[in-house]
Image (cartoon, rainbow over all chains, first blue to last red; front, side, top):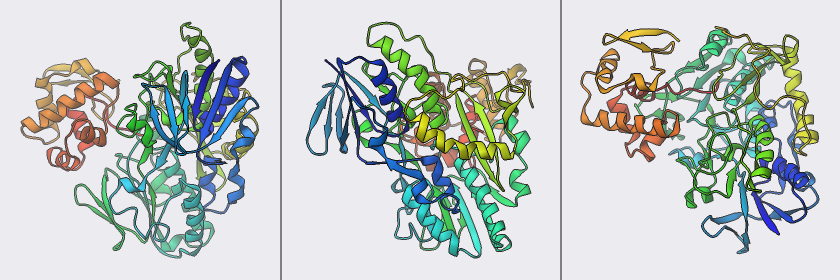
Length: 411
Length: 105
């Protein structure tokens, strides 16, 4: 009997459990561990503050998506000992493994920033990257009539790196549609040098902030928050005042990753970028946001990565070479408000380019361009996520990025 | 990719002037790059940062973040702001001949 443990039953862990149970024969025992019984559809958090999704739209029970033949263990991971091939749970149980998959994601961590995790959190300071945060922000937006509305991306990398931009565009549309726009100043504060940092995207989209009258504060590295006086203070002593702050906290991987010596400075697991094998242990892989891949932390990446990981894993455990190589493919909708959205498609080496997706020349989706079709694509994706993606069913789009359909040499 | 001439040499750069070829950089070029952005003299502290950036990039293929320079390279973020005023992440990568820090779009 071989033992595989998957840590984390989120997007990546659940997909891996479904696909591997199908492919591995009965002498494999598969166990998946998670501390939370609820599966959250995280892309839906973005819509909750604006009332377009109800909280119940984004939750289901995790067990629904775990296939027969996989043991589901509901517990918090206390410790990983990679030398002893053992995981200890908070109830003291020790689980041994032959192979381990870490899929425990990355999490907004306000306590990383002095002054952020204050009694004002949930009052004048909010986030939309957690279920509770998105719901509290919905209530705060409903009663916010006027003042400085500041969105602050504290530090990269974060999961769904386009979400702060989407949030800014949706907030602008929300305030306009609710007749409050003239009384609300929207300010976007980022450590990057611009809202759009890749050359082609910047040329196509560079004017979006100006067109929507969103003030941009670039190169702002937050050192601390003075929550009492409602100020962001940077390392070089610049200050940004706010009336309502929407923060995108520092994202950190699980603490047990760091304690086991597997992580980088953000507790993301150091892995080979093409196979997801740990650079430290030859029986540990990391999937999804938990891995320190130099591409976006996003569900689409976890999805495309699965088509590389599963056949590789099957080979690897038989002592055969891993033939598939991940290209860093990511595919992200960007909501821009007023029932429109953009779409971007890129990988480790190709930046987002204009064009059509997934069918070259036809679409129906347009890359780097605001369209209604893109918006409906994003909304439709929720159904695909619950019904196909998580259950490991194939979605008919190629997992490697394709140049067909993209405008080569676009500028 | 555009080609420019810095210190009498042809150098490949991106639209913002950041070097795109790791091996086209050397210590002499760093001084010219520094003076291009108003950093007069590269001190020992500057070199500590540049050396860390270059070796970390070589190992990981990515320009390290301010956090990585502080936790792995053990150089406090506050002091990076003194050495490379206002825009340390951009300025330090520029002088070290590495790609500028960027988002996904």
